[in-house]
Length: 219
Length: 232
Image (cartoon, rainbow over all chains, first blue to last red; front, side):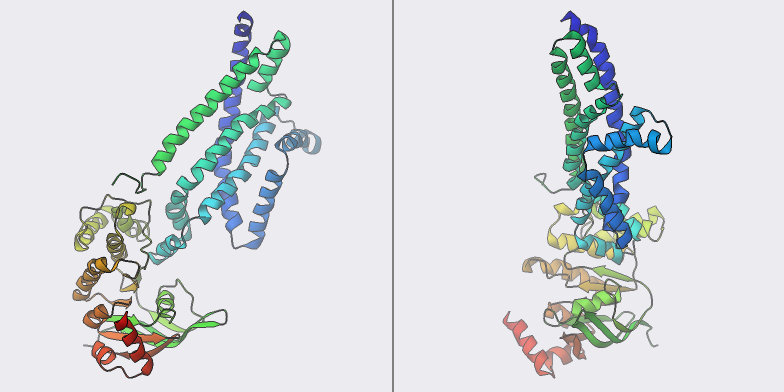
């Protein structure tokens, strides 16, 4: 037990990096998904084709492969040195934006045509219609799958440990190696569970907020 | 004094692929006039209405619209994420850039006019169909359109609550609001309209005062339509 106390600060430091990786990816990929979603729905064929190819590539290849690709691509092909952390964030953002784009697209397509017609009849521009009428109404529908992806992201951050990034996973495996004891795995599991639990709590609050205009039982 | 023409349509044709939904329609409406369009389902009534405000493009013909239109849909299409008040005030504030206080004052008046002054802060999901449609009418009126279009405004409602919507429309008629009403409510057409159009297969078959249309139908098609409506 004394031994794990010795390694726990090291693991907590790794946890901070994991959280940083998670937050940074989410903050950048959530908005980036939107242009790809709108692009996929565009009537301008070349644009929708490009957006669909983007989604196809990033959803259709292993995240680990993408991780290594970008890690090596910049120094080898462009001669630019980037840190492992930057390569990881870049890869995760591009990858998760593809998943979020598909979630958003589904949400947008679930809105009744009548909402567009009413907006048109009132003289709203296409931008106003999308921003103020359609997108707010997709929130409730896209929230559960988005939270699902966010929870997957918490766990996917562990892949960063394959590069020179000392996240929770990397800190844990090196603790296990040095202690020659498996206890750190259990501590890591608990820390990951706490992270996903906090996410679930936030999701519940958001779900309630976005359901405020439902009829439900509040009659 | 001759009243000004709000809308004039000449030789309007609307095709969906090889199907001709509206076939060579000529039609005009003057300020303050109330026109009812009747006819069987699929006769092109709604399509014609949707051509007027650009929800449908016309295939050929000439249309001259002076001013703006407001539209009331069969299925209301209220913005579900906005309260009734926000539904009414959004477009005047965001589209016409009107002063918020003025628009809110107008919303109060409109809510009162449709008899829902206590529902301003309620979301549409909490309203009955008849209440939703009355809010939808208020929303359209808030833009102060020159021509109000009603696309079967009571067809999605239970028979016992169509009255509350028709009463609001009668109030508008008393204020000489220019309106085109596509409807299956023969009683309303007879009582409120200045002029009634009977459409079938994309064509205006007969046009006249309510007396002419309902008391002395000339064509066989109108006679059989009216008798089928009576049986229903």
